[in-house]
Structure formats: structure tokens, C-alpha cells
Image: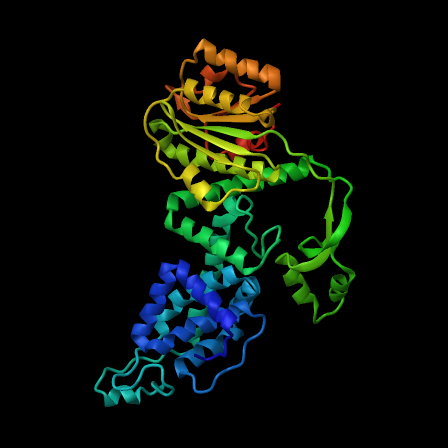
Length: 463
């Protein structure tokens, strides 16, 4: 409408519309007000957010669009939003949608009898509308437009942050890479498509999104714990990559810090993990045994948010397994084994996550069947030795002597760790005590808001 956007930018915006029904509905609402030409307005917003500098302007754009676009650069909120979205197709799409939602009330209706979208279709005096016998539409002042742009920019900033936080729990598991994350390994079209597909799935499934957000919080706490406990080994330079680590910046990047006109741009790239630095790697960590998760899905787990919490811990365990190059095997159970999902090291996809976590809780609790199934899985392959088994439950059940014997024999012969996470209370007493005979570690979590209590399990510390 106002800017000469490229085919690449138009493609990025169309792809966002394909995965976001609310965005498509907003565009259609604008078209109803202004005609087909309105579709260029959100595309212009997206282009300006994505590009570090504005594209060339077109002639004869509608006055209302010109005012909105030309007042935006006067605002600090707009500048900060552009820095957040620069060269980030995912963030630019989310932000453009949020801004469109806030700015749509400022878009005037096209006068009757004149093709919508034509230049000059509305002037500030509203003379065309008076000639058609329509009530005069109030023209917003510059102050009103600035206030709306500030609110829209803040809403867009919050929307981008919420979207990125929603992806935190699945980012590493699905090998997603977005500017602003700790590691940007791929910014190509395939990665952007995967990011948008994952976000689209989470947006349509509120429960799965809550699980991913909580898993992201657990993973951040676990990462901080790892950083405080582990001393980095000697690393060697093996290339150049984009980074946010100032200690690894190239001399050319450090030189920009000394230039008053380049310093701000350099700091923005550093915050977005887009600065050029040395790529280093240390000795590869050897893959260890698999992770087997026994997840209680009995009806009592649906109470007080325990099912969301337990599945967030399960997802965090998949993240740890991915980082440590371990296989991951889920055994969901209630009165029997109801579902199994296996993921090879680093091979998780969206379908695996949905199959593993998007299920309701029902039925009673029986520990024997899932424990014996875990024993069979570990014994069934030589690569399953030194496995870590995490049991997440809020129930009690008497173990058969044969079950206890099988689990203990496996621990003794192959060093298998049985890490029990008992969440909540049963009859006022701490649950999970019936698993004591086989447990290598026992973690009692009576307050699911205390995420630190489960960090040793998420870190697969079976000591």
C-alpha cells in the first residue's frame, strides 16, 4: 500500500497468515472496511518490522495509511520493537498481527461509490462522505494516532515475548532456532516453517502450551544449575558463528564498540545473539543410556494441575535426553500401560510431543505393569544398560514381590537408576512410599510451584 515490498517479504507474511487464523481474520476485517487494497497495509507493517531500514515508498498511498506509517518512527516503542523483530521472520509476523489488531479501529471505512483503496478516497474534511449523504467520520488527531501506535507497539512486544516463551519448552527438543534464543544454528526457511508450525500447534492447544511454558521454566532453572556446577573444559576454535557471548566476538565486531555510530547496532546484534564470534567446541560428551519415563495418568493426576506439572517434567526430561544424546521412552499408565512413545536421540518431532503429552487422565493406579514393562525394555537391548528410569506419580499401590525382585536385580546387574517423583499427598500422607524398595532416589513434591525440587531428576542425577 505504501512501501515497495519484495516477493520474499510478501512470502513471509503470507506464510504467517497460513498458520494464524486470527491474523487472517483481521486482514479480512480490514478488507471489508477498505477493499482488497487493504491487504497491503499489514504487509507494509511486517516489512518495516523485518527490515533494518524502510523499503522504498510508493506514490499515491491513502492518507490514513501514510499518517500511521509516518508517525511511527517518532516513537521509542516502535524503534525498540523493530530492533526486536529485525531479520526475525517469526517475531515480525507475530508483531505485525498484534499491531494490526490494535490499529484496525483507526482504519476508516471506504466511501460508497468510490473504489476502495484508491488514492484520495478520504480527505481530512470528509467532503466525499458528505456528498454521499453519510455521517462524517471523525478524523483522529496526530496525538490520538501516536497513542494508538504506542499501545500497538507495546502489545506487539508482549505478543512476541509470549510467543517465544511458549516455544521455550520445545525449542531444543525440536531443534528450533530463532534470533534471540541462546543458540542460533539455522535461520533458513525450513527452520522458520518448523517454528511457525510448532507455535501454531501450541496456540490451538492451550493445555499443551501451558505444559511447554512450564517445561521452559524448568529447563531454564536446570540450565542455571548446570552452569553453576560445571566448570567448562578446554575448547578449541573450529569456525565462526553468530553468538551473544562477548568473550568470543571477532576483533572486527569489538572494533565497532569503539565507534559511536556503530556501537548501538553492535549491542543490538549482541543481545539478539547475531554478532559474529569464534565457534568453539570441547570434547564430545559420550552418549549414555536411555531415559525411561513412567508417567502416571490416573484420574487423581487431573486434580490441582498435577497432570500439567508432571507432563512439563516429562517434556523437560526429553530436553535433557536430547542434550545428552540419549534415547527417550515414555510409558504412560493408570491401571495398566496405556501408551508408549519412543524417541531416538535428537529425533523428536511435533507428532511425538502430541502423542506423548496430549492425553487426559483417567482410571486407577497400578505400578507393577509399567515397572515390568520398563524392565523388559532395558533388558531387551544391550544399549539400554545404565538407563535412568523416572517414575512420576501421585498414587500408592502395593508392589508384587516379583516386581520388586526384577527391578532390584536390574539395578544391581546394570546400574539402572529408579528415580521416583512423588507429587502431592494421599490421605494426608506423602505418596510414593510403596516404591521405596526399588527407588534409587525419592523426591517428594508437595508444592508443584516449587520447581527447584525436581531439578535433580530433570538433570538425571541418579545418585
